[in-house]
Length: 356
Image (cartoon, rainbow, N blue to C red):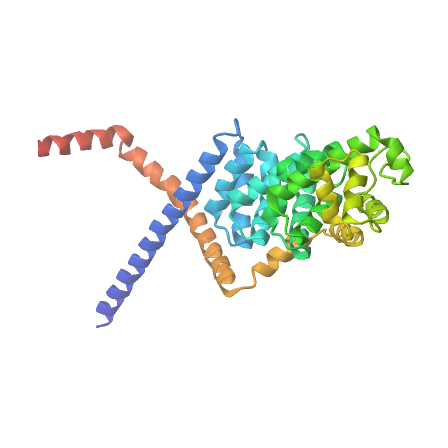
C-alpha cells in the first residue's frame, strides 16, 4: 500500500513538474519574442544592454499591473519614439508608472508622454538621465493637473501635442504655466485638442497684437510684456485684461479687443479666462510642486484587490521566467543534438511519404 501511494505521489509530482516546465518555457518564449521584436528596430544592441533591458522589464512587472511581456513590448514604442536602448531602459519605469496612474496601457502611455515631452522641446537625445528627469517632470505635471481640474491625463497630453506644447516652447513658457491655463480651460469645459488650439492662439496673437499695436495697449495701460520684451506670465496677462475689461459692457469689451488688434478667436479665449487669474496662479504653483505625483497616484492605484492579485501573478511569472531561461537553452542543445532542423525536415519528409 505504501508503494502504491508513493508511486501515485511521484506521478503527481512529475505531472506538476512537467506543467511548471511547460508554463515556464512558454512564458520565457513569449517574453523573449517580445524582447526580440522590440530590439530589432534599435540597431545593434549589446548582450549586456539586452540583459539590462530584460531586467528592467521584469522589474516593472513586479511593481505595476503590467506583465513582463507587456513591459518588453513597450520598448518597441519607446524606440519608435526615437529613444535608444539606454534611454529606453531609463524611461520604461517612468512610462509604466505614468500608465498606472493614468489608467491606460503602455502603448498609449508611451505615445502620450513622449509626444508631449517632444512637443515641449524637453526631449534630450544625448543624455539618458536628463531625458528621464524631463519625462518625469512632464508625467508629474500631467497627472497633477488631472487631480486639480476637470480633465483627464490623456486630455491634457492631447492639448500639449496639439500645438500648445510647441507654442509654449516658442514663447519660452514652462509646462507648469501652460498647463495651468489648460486647467482653467478645462474648468470651463474646453479640453483636449481644442484646448491646445486655443492656448496656441492666445500665445501667438497676444504677442503679435501687443507688438503691432503697442500704442493702443499703452493707452489702456495694458502691460503684456516684461522689461525684456517677453510675454509676461499668463496669470499676469489675464489679470491685466481683467483690470481693463472688467468694468466694461460686452459691447465695449468687443470694441476694445478689436481696437487692440486681437482677432475674434483670441478675444473669445480671453473672455473665457477672465476672472480666473488667481485660480491660474494657484494651479501653476501646485503644478510646480508636483514632483512625485505620478508615483504617489500609481501606488494608490495598486491598493485594489485586483491590482494586488496581478502583482502576485507577476511575481509568480517572474519565477517561471527564471526557470524558462534555464530550460530553453537545454532544450535548444537537445534539439541540436537530435540533428537540428535537418533532422526535423528528414522526419517530416518520411512522414509525408508514408501518407502519400
